[in-house]
Image (cartoon, rainbow, N blue to C red):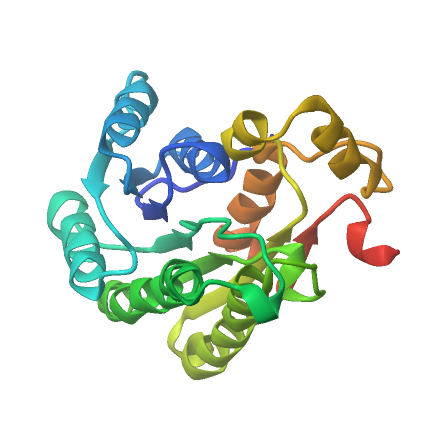
Length: 252
């Protein structure tokens, strides 16, 4: 993976304890950033922070439920107070949700997915943006999905939330680009994360691989490489965009 210069930057990653979030946090740490790992899973989050700081990188952990706005506010306050500011944010925390057609979808399941996958991104940005304005600018990367641009059966809440993330990203980019804050979204296909490994048998996994023309699932580090580029100064003209990492899934 290419390494970008993030020295003197503070980067915050929600859902940073594992999978894509962990890979993003590792990329920022490798580039010299101070990193805040924010996650609901305190044990894994603290372990990840310890592992990434083993080489001397300034990495801290903060527990957060992104569906709670007051916790998102405290998360950003931690970054500013512990590391001196906020320049990069990756709003990555999310869940898969229930599997059911719209006419049978559990209402409480809908509410939970929207609360975490969409409102959680808004709550993060709501407090990240003022901190970035105070710091003189920054870059936000919101984790959407291929399902931010296409439909998928039995996943209405997830699809709706990820479509919403695209709209939120575009609106914020229009509002804040002239003030030095770039806002982009990334659309991964199915990625080889613990969520996939732990919940799919061999047959189901093979079925997922088959829908990717590239013939395999993506790796967290491949998504993190795109996120790191978008967060870097090399992407200074890129804002308001939606960038796929999907093995040609959406080209079909």
